[in-house]
Image (cartoon, rainbow, N blue to C red; front, top):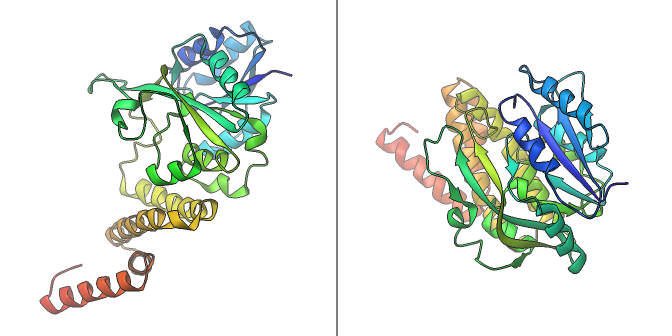
Length: 312
């Protein structure tokens, strides 16, 4: 039984996967590490690259090769479920680690802090085409990530939203499983994990930079076409409703504001696509999600725009 299972999901990462795998193989630890890779039926040579590595390192790499595409969340859940280690570390196929002692440092932290379910660290975000200068997460989220070690609670996650680089996460397997069924329909697997993992403990933050987070045109956040954004909005509306059930009621306001914005955007995009009734439904959800006073304010705005003949 390995101490750490590295959960790596990959799809069309032929340019990046070797670098991700090598960054796992370079880890220096006093415990056993397995790399579990879920290859989601890529249309490029990603699967061949993975199989080549597995042939060379059969005792260190396990390849999960579904016969049909599972999608991001289906692949993530299946790959995590296949991880047998006491701890699970996350690494997507287009990111990579930069410190050979990353896993050792994080396991040591969790051994020293039994009340923590997860250990995270700083990372560098960079554009694959070098169109934007790299920056650290601690710079991007300077009001959240300090220059010193810190423990984050679920309240912090609810208040600040997404600020944790996925490739920095190492957590206790027992803190996550069994995984709720709704996760399969979520859009943001990492933020869902942040809230789930802080149900029973805190996240320990190390200010050390030990991974790189790659942004590129094929990434999950790069949706540009209207239809893709409508599908993304639908998943985000679904998952946000579940986030509210995970956190204390005093944090519901933040998620309600997010839902309001999502429903407004969805209403606008559905109208552009000719889905009039769905557009009206989302507009109503947008103006009613916050509360009665907010609903009345929006209705007054609608009445005013109708009176003035302004198109909504």
